[in-house]
Image (cartoon, rainbow over the protein chains, first blue to last red):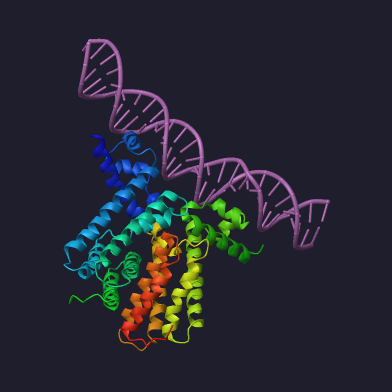
Length: 193
Length: 193
DNA sequence: CACTCTAGAGAACGATCGTTCTCGCCGGTA
DNA sequence: TACCGGCGAGAACGATCGTTCTCTAGAGTG
């Protein structure tokens, strides 16, 4: 097994186990067993558990945002439709059987108070999401598009945490309806959807 | 020291330390030191750490909701004003120096995947908050008041997690503005505020 | 005073965990 | 063949932690 493959398998195992059980609920030996990578190679790839946790979060940030905003770009021909498509993506995410909320929110809750690196990665992730939403609202041609983006972002965050803790996906449809109202009130032309 | 006082001091220490560092970041000896209650009495009050964690969360649920909705009742003479007052309460909470988000969200992120008791308490808490918001929207005299309550609740949740991770309190004002828009769109008479 | 009961301080125990070390095996090379 | 370097398996180490146990001192009671 070459080093890149070992690293990928470790990150795959880390993503699955950390997300499912929390960081402190997964031991290095669990990761060895789940990845098939020996402890010696594991510590060659990641000198400490903290390094592995941060690499896991950074990779997840990139993939998660790409998946969300690629979906939006592909499922809407207007900025307004693209913004509403965010909530459709959330709905299908919430329906996945192993959905357990936002990995960054969960990691922040677990480690944010004691691990500044984790807190910073969570903050960077949330900032990046909000920035990409702002990019979409900027194309609506409405005044106060930044304030609108902040409000739409709150609906995204609220839907994720509500769906995670309630265990039901309906928060996505509530968020979508609220977003539709806010878009209309902000002056975005309705698209009929 | 009588048993009730020991219990109170333990719960006070637990609330402060668990909220600040996360459950797994606090040892039983830390709680002993912070509370001044000996380990022997600690285990007389709470047979296991899990029992203490759940008691901490239950007490916090009662106090937190009472504080939020008492403030709403006292700072609004109409249902609409009371609903908007929720976000003012959030703003002052977010500004507290040791604010670190929702204790239930944080505990769910840390332990929800492995401790069903914690997951259930978090779910009960969120359900209770939403129920109390629904109680307020029911007095607005608008159609679809339940859907409106769900949407206002998403703004509350989104504001809490956003303020926690960003470290800034501005999410409360964004949430309030969005709530105002949603209330108006739902047909609630403006109060001028 | 003698006895008993309780509580506190802190040691001890057993489990877990992050990290490192040992050892034996195998592939490449002269 | 003889050597060598790196690898995997898993033991070992040291720290932490939840929980229990020991020992001692003191308060209450006759």
